[in-house]
Image (cartoon, rainbow over all chains, first blue to last red; front, side, top):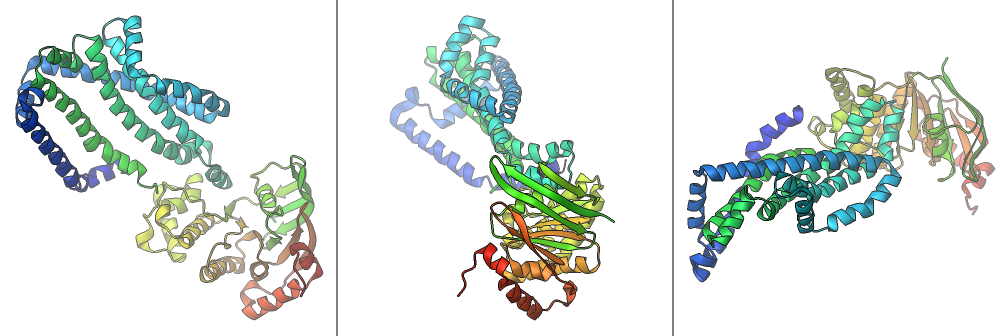
Length: 260
Length: 245
């Protein structure tokens, strides 16, 4: 509870520290505008037009519907990978044999391109929610798994021994020694997994469904509607940035601040 | 009366015998040191006595109700601030939060930690400060038996003396029993009632030295004289492989 209070209290200072990031974003937009002046509206619409288009999108009922479908799918897939990845990672971490066996399997899972999963999922689950959710799950799960595994494998015996000298009960050992350490590994893994989920969901939708942001992107492409396509990309990136920087980053800082 | 009694203790890792036929008794209120070269099994002996390792042969009777260890490395939990680290042992005993933080604050001030350091994390502390916190954590629980595993070895002489003075005060007031291992003879002479000399390979006790003068009355001069006397002792020369000039 103290940690939550602290996150809220530090929040204004954290936002104030964001000027540098905002300047960098404006620099990027300026470069984008230069690109527009070189290549014309067809290839690269100007930032101004794109943002105007974006505002229009948010008045469009169908778009909002699609957006919520996409968010739903990403969250289902992410929640699954978070649950399963964490549980399996902890399990593998606590048993040496399991962690040795799981290594190559994780390498295979990580090395498997998401596009291959989409193809397989389309064969297995058909065109629809399940395909997208499965792909999101299978692509982001290894990240969480590795985080949990590393967190558990790097627990230090010396702290446990110290706790033993105080005859610390095992429940307290869990809450005061294992969890803070493991969580500092798992939480950043969750954040990366969420980013991964957000990218994969659009890709899977583009290929496997007729609704959602990804499908809208496919439509914009077939109509050569670069402006809408770009506006959709901005929505995707913008949402991820808001979630990461406004919500997750302050928590991450609090969780990791004791680290070197 | 509580005591730590070790009889015919033998311990090995695999085929290598670490300790052989160790016997001694530590009575309540006493300070017992085990000195010997590094790698001679001192830490193993301490861990056996503290119950951190399982006994193989021989008996260990430990009738002290509470105990704590100050380790050579401070072993502070990196995610807790100074006060929470000090209060860790109290938390394990179920002392309520406000009370344990109050006690931690009290002892922290006594150990010359500053108010502004209280919410720092271990990564922000110097080596000496970490060791003070570690000491405070061990002592705040008011253990009946305190194990010292060379906690002074990485400290500068000023800080070493300061922490030793804290220990001497505790000894004077008879509130504590100490089992101390070190490779530093002078340190052992300053603090102990009895010194056991542990010769390595395999670790066995080859000599016992006793000192009657109360710790508080031991001047530097006395400590130097005693150290010089011990350094000339044939067993010490043999154990530490001192070259004779």
